[in-house]
Length: 563
Image (cartoon, rainbow, N blue to C red; front, side, top):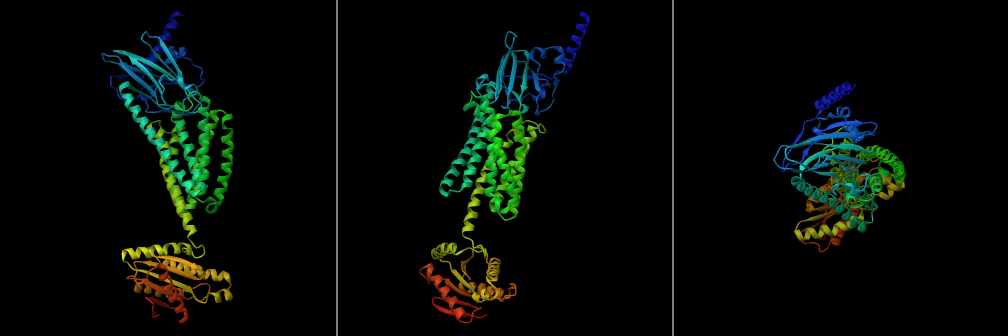
């Protein structure tokens, strides 16, 4: 019987020896080195193995060399054991730092030997108070000292309800501190970027009172706080004594981020006007997310994080569809939104594939989500600016003709006049009137009168290019400003417009226009209003002369332009 036990013991010991991964050589000044390829891993599906059983030859034989650059297992109920061996071949003891770079691990136990060879356990994790960590850092960091000419094996046990990512590295203390300082600096810049965007848009909101800025700030704040939890910064500085709050705040902040993002997209993309069906789906999804976020703390973290992870992908796809529809229907702000959302969506996909174990856990996949989010925030701020421009343009646009309205003309005429006066360049003005418009309304009806105005407006839009500025001045009257254009050139354009309008086929209605032209050249007018009065007087005389013609007024003299 004793011989049989000895045989099986030697057998399992041989298996463990054959299965052992290569030891990692360490030395003073050692730079951060990944331990993942040198790990031996064991999946404990029952999550019941303890350290005493791990040390038995039978279980040691089950620790298999990993030999891969990453070890992420997605959502799993299994516990995972990791073992690795460090070798110091130098003549001096080497102080080392072993780091687990993913802070969202519920329970993480570490075993190492002291100078007497006794095993020492450190029990930590984000389900335990922050004080359980050997070093007060956002990641799990275990300091060890490897004596000269020695070799030691270390063990870790992972158990978590979220995504399980093993990201172990080892470095000397002297190499770890500069790396830590750089990371702290980058984190400060990162969160400072969020803060600057929030403050900037707060001032814009106070100035404009547009609720879109409220949704943007809510999105930026909740997203920034979410990443604070995700990075372990919040647990380190804000609620180190409340693991329960730290875990559930991650879900709540993710839910708030999705809620504010959805509402922001509905406003910026004008979903109700441009994509009503998609907007309706988004509205009902919004109600559902509000309810789920409110009750999330009542349920298991493992369930809620899986639900919200899937919900994130649904929201990304939905808002991508809404943005696409809005872009196709002419929204400028939606273009910025789409670029921002595609940037975030790409980073979300990378992170979610990593979360579900389909991509390796490394610096890029772990931080892509955060980098994409900050870039998205900057682009969304630009989208808000574009939206303001669109709103202003709507306020300056005549809905019927799609030209600028009188309000915009009254603002731009003095500006262009002063610019021409200061630069010594000419400025011409065309004032147009649709002939016999009252007769058109009386004979064909007001709807056809609107069609006539729309047809003339569309023609003007085709013929007028920047820096020219075309407006519907009121009723059937239009005005066109032509910066850096002399009277003769303006008259040529006016003649073309008269001819093109006469050629229009507008539902069988004959259309003609009369145009008065005036030009500011050589200081012949003292004020913008005089320029307009001159063009308006020329228009009046063109109508008196029989309509369907152009008259140019130059410093009070009226010249009839031949048709």
